[in-house]
Image 1 (tube, helix red, strand yellow):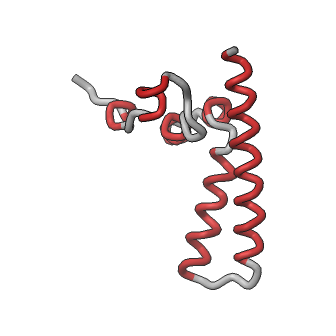
Image 2 (tube, helix red, strand yellow):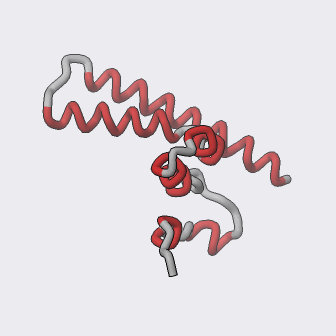
Length: 97
Protein backbone atom coordinates (compact mmCIF):
# COMPACT_ATOMS: atom_id res chain seq x y z
CA UNK A 1 0.00 0.00 0.00
CA UNK A 2 1.43 3.34 -1.08
CA UNK A 3 1.14 6.09 1.54
CA UNK A 4 0.27 9.59 0.41
CA UNK A 5 1.25 12.88 2.01
CA UNK A 6 -2.43 13.38 2.88
CA UNK A 7 -2.25 10.33 5.18
CA UNK A 8 -0.08 12.36 7.58
CA UNK A 9 -2.15 15.54 7.74
CA UNK A 10 -3.63 16.70 11.01
CA UNK A 11 -7.43 16.81 11.18
CA UNK A 12 -9.16 20.11 11.86
CA UNK A 13 -10.51 20.02 15.41
CA UNK A 14 -12.96 22.84 14.68
CA UNK A 15 -14.42 20.93 11.74
CA UNK A 16 -14.65 17.72 13.76
CA UNK A 17 -16.37 19.38 16.72
CA UNK A 18 -18.59 21.95 15.03
CA UNK A 19 -18.79 20.79 11.42
CA UNK A 20 -17.51 24.04 9.89
CA UNK A 21 -14.13 25.02 8.52
CA UNK A 22 -11.73 27.19 10.50
CA UNK A 23 -9.60 30.02 9.11
CA UNK A 24 -6.71 27.62 8.55
CA UNK A 25 -8.62 24.81 6.86
CA UNK A 26 -6.94 23.98 3.57
CA UNK A 27 -3.41 25.15 4.33
CA UNK A 28 -1.99 21.62 4.68
CA UNK A 29 -3.65 20.49 1.47
CA UNK A 30 -2.43 23.63 -0.30
CA UNK A 31 1.16 22.89 0.79
CA UNK A 32 0.72 19.33 -0.42
CA UNK A 33 -0.50 20.62 -3.79
CA UNK A 34 2.54 22.92 -4.06
CA UNK A 35 4.85 19.95 -3.43
CA UNK A 36 3.02 18.11 -6.21
CA UNK A 37 3.45 21.07 -8.59
CA UNK A 38 -0.23 22.01 -8.62
CA UNK A 39 0.27 25.75 -8.05
CA UNK A 40 -3.10 27.01 -9.25
CA UNK A 41 -4.95 24.30 -7.33
CA UNK A 42 -2.99 25.29 -4.20
CA UNK A 43 -4.12 28.90 -4.60
CA UNK A 44 -7.73 27.81 -5.10
CA UNK A 45 -7.50 25.60 -2.00
CA UNK A 46 -6.04 28.33 0.25
CA UNK A 47 -5.60 31.77 -1.35
CA UNK A 48 -3.16 33.05 1.28
CA UNK A 49 -0.66 30.23 0.75
CA UNK A 50 1.82 32.21 -1.33
CA UNK A 51 1.78 35.32 0.84
CA UNK A 52 2.21 33.10 3.91
CA UNK A 53 5.21 31.42 2.29
CA UNK A 54 6.62 34.86 1.46
CA UNK A 55 6.11 35.95 5.07
CA UNK A 56 7.83 32.80 6.35
CA UNK A 57 10.72 33.42 3.95
CA UNK A 58 11.17 37.02 5.12
CA UNK A 59 11.00 35.98 8.79
CA UNK A 60 13.55 33.22 8.11
CA UNK A 61 15.93 35.54 6.29
CA UNK A 62 15.61 38.14 9.06
CA UNK A 63 16.37 35.47 11.66
CA UNK A 64 19.77 34.75 10.13
CA UNK A 65 20.56 38.11 8.50
CA UNK A 66 19.19 41.28 9.99
CA UNK A 67 17.42 43.23 7.25
CA UNK A 68 17.05 46.99 7.68
CA UNK A 69 13.28 47.30 7.17
CA UNK A 70 12.37 43.73 8.08
CA UNK A 71 9.91 44.60 10.86
CA UNK A 72 7.98 46.94 8.58
CA UNK A 73 7.93 44.35 5.76
CA UNK A 74 6.83 41.61 8.17
CA UNK A 75 4.06 43.82 9.56
CA UNK A 76 2.77 44.69 6.09
CA UNK A 77 2.85 41.05 4.99
CA UNK A 78 1.06 40.00 8.19
CA UNK A 79 -1.74 42.51 7.58
CA UNK A 80 -2.04 41.40 3.94
CA UNK A 81 -2.25 37.77 5.05
CA UNK A 82 -4.92 38.51 7.63
CA UNK A 83 -7.00 40.36 5.04
CA UNK A 84 -6.67 37.53 2.50
CA UNK A 85 -7.43 34.81 5.06
CA UNK A 86 -10.50 36.55 6.50
CA UNK A 87 -11.84 37.57 3.08
CA UNK A 88 -11.48 34.09 1.61
CA UNK A 89 -13.05 32.58 4.74
CA UNK A 90 -16.07 34.89 4.52
CA UNK A 91 -16.49 34.07 0.83
CA UNK A 92 -16.22 30.34 1.54
CA UNK A 93 -18.76 30.52 4.38
CA UNK A 94 -21.20 32.57 2.26
CA UNK A 95 -21.06 29.91 -0.43
CA UNK A 96 -22.08 27.28 2.11
CA UNK A 97 -25.19 29.17 3.21
